[in-house]
Image (cartoon, rainbow, N blue to C red; front, top):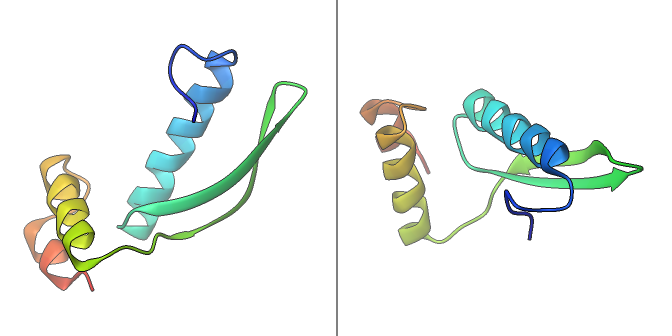
Length: 78
């Protein structure tokens, strides 16, 4: 697991920025596969993340609280 105190703080920042952009684009939580080669971040693929009904509610709630989606979009989340 990456964290802010990791060996590659620049790569961590790029990964977080990319994930925020993808979540905004999809309007949902994302599952991202990536690799780091010679200190450079490569996104291999991304997709909407799979989760249980309780987790879907929690993610929708958090995205509303974070301003990523509105309540109408949260209610439409499957």
